[in-house]
Image 1 (cartoon, one colour):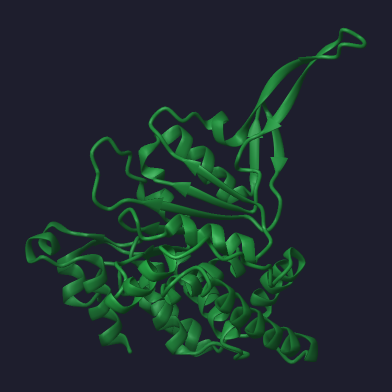
Image 2: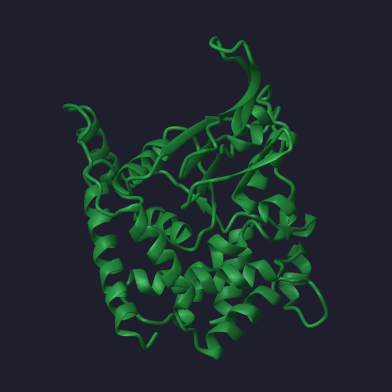
Length: 328
């Protein structure tokens, strides 16, 4: 990143990050890591799966982010009877009263927005999940044989409730792999919860002002791709992803606790996420610590724990903690 313009853009991005955090602080208490990961997802042109119990302000957080970024926001509540056309849009036969001529007109569905909150994505059938995942991958929607390009930037934040699993349609591993991050929202600390109660029970919601334009976001997305990365950082990311695969040469605990490891897309997202994290912090290039910071959100939904892990009471995050400790 030798260009002076790019160095200026890095500084501008860091200032924008600080402004976004300050605005969000008016309405959202805590959740700093989740906010950072959502911004990284946006600037890497990825999508994120957010897992957390109801009542942790997932919807409020995502809606607030879209307000500050001055982007069109759409919330889709996924239910068992939701059809693909309910989210992509549908053709309706319209009659021109002047000429009496009838023709089909396409009415856009809620997917035609910049930030999509796909609420409880695992409650809708695979056919509707597939329509969303096609839009995520291609940034296009197909209806009645015609393709419609979605507006950029396009970010899908899908939520899942980890408690109620009855009557759900779990996302297959191949579809989970489409998400850059899997983010766990946890309960707030005691201090944060006290602040939340004080702020939400005394007066109306504070209004937020936009701190960044759509054009700025597209510029920063392009900037992330131009960030240089040292070979040793790329090699570390590739080796870290490869160590999750229970093959010959894998650490013993990986062979014992994992059935399947992460594919090459994990290495790509480790590097992309590291680039975005570095420039959000105002640094021109990422280092190995950035890759380690990205490891759990990138890898936790790409590894499948075995029966042995379940018997030992070990989850995906604990496996990754041990892997990171041995790799660092």
